[in-house]
Length: 334
Image 1 (tube, one colour):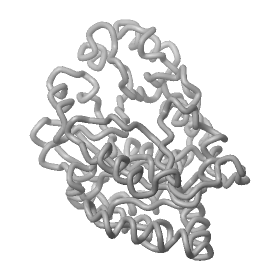
Image 2 (tube, rainbow, N blue to C red):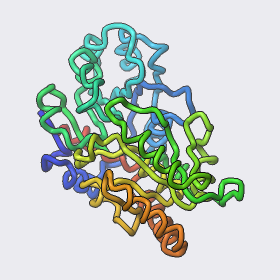
Image 3 (tube, one colour):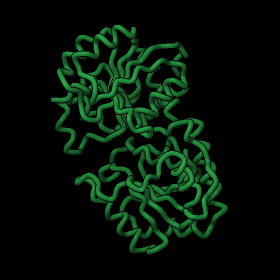
């Protein structure tokens, strides 16, 4: 059965309602399967956010533990919940592992699956059979129902301790930047087209920072504080998924960047266009250039939106907020 935080089909009002009624703060032990080796990984940030809320987290490195061992680890640690963010998949029989668990299980992921080739893994991956599945795709209710996934929408966030505005560095002061991969999903050719067009239109005034540039943590905050305009993108497949966007939005705003991003229907319920960020209509390149140019020549407007977007992300869109809502849903057993 598909759930949208126990409310409407889109999940938006249900998520807002859950934010207004967060879980009661009770200490619990959470065993967490994921990839904790990179200090910047989502799993690391989620683990630290759960610990901020007062919970004890047992990290289980996914490529170094077997499915057969996990139920005993969970039992020995007296864990109240098994949380799982999938990267490679577990060695062993994950379906049997879930049956043997002495506590509820929950999956958590930020990626889009509906409409991509990776959706073919749903029948074969035990991750999808967790008691609760939280992903950032809130616009695919029929898809989740068809595959028997007990799905809950959880929009992406930013790690609270990295949600701050840094001082700009003259070395990174520039007009327009994009951070992230040039090559992307084959189903999403918009990404390289966007970058190519920005490069052709703005020339040396545009810079692409791919993941290999090492712009993470504090360095990323400094970059966002220094660049005048950050152009964003989400693998939203024609931007007709009304409640899916990537973590690029809370990450950029939370780290102090001024963001221009394609318009997504549900986004307006969380961030205001021209208030917290600036939106343009998907595929309207002239509108994109016009908005970039407007804010390049109106620095006071740009800086006000930049400050408002940061404050909004810090107030309501960190992983601490996301984990509080997630645990409240699990407590309620919806």
